Length: 236
Image (cartoon, rainbow, N blue to C red; front, side, top):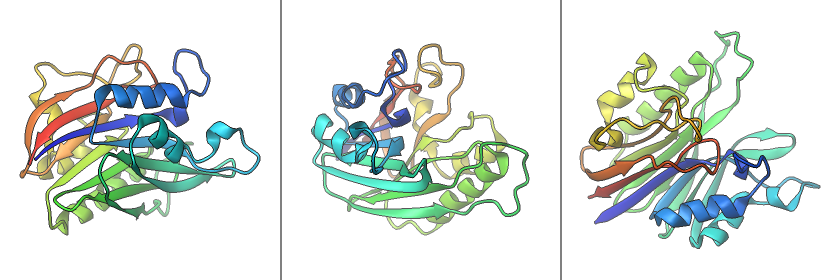
C-alpha cells in the first residue's frame, strides 16, 4: 500500500504574511498536497468566549480540508484553551494521547517550558506518532526518551513526524536517527522548513521504520504558516 504522509505546524492557523488567522489557508494548503493523513502542531481547542476561529480548530480544519477522520490531542492549556497536536485523515484510525513528562527539576534557564505530548494514531496496518517537542534542552531529552519508549514496544510499522525544534545535527536527536529513517534523506538536496518565507533551519521531520520504502519526500516552498509543510510518499 502507498501512503502519502504530511506534517505541518500551523501556528494555530495564523497566516504568516498577513498576521491574521486563516483556517481556510491552512486547509487549502493541506488539500493542495492531497495527503492520506496530516499531523498538525500548534492547534487550539474550544475556549469559552473566544473568537469562533478558536472553536474546535481540528474539526473545522477537517471539514475545510475534506478529511473525514480527525483527533485532537491537547497537551496544555494556554489562555484557558486546550492546545496541542492533531491529526486529520482520509481513513479511520484510533487515537491516543501519550504524555511527555515535564523535567523535574528543570535544568535550563529557558523561559519557554511548556508541557508536551505525543499523539498516537493506529491505522491498523501501521501507526503514526505525531508531536511537537519543546525548546528547553531537558524537555527535548524527555521527549526523545518518550518516543524511544514507544518505539521499543511497537508491534507494527511506524511513522514518526512533527516539529522537533532541533536541527538534524543536534546530538539529542541521534537516538531517533539510529532507530528510524529520516525520509528527507531521499531528497536530492537538503531542504529547510523554518521560517517559511526564508527558511534557515530544518526542524520538521517525517521518520519511518524499516518496513517502509520511501518513494519521495519534499519540503515545498509554501508560505502559509511560519513553518513549511513536510511530505513523504511511502510504500508499505
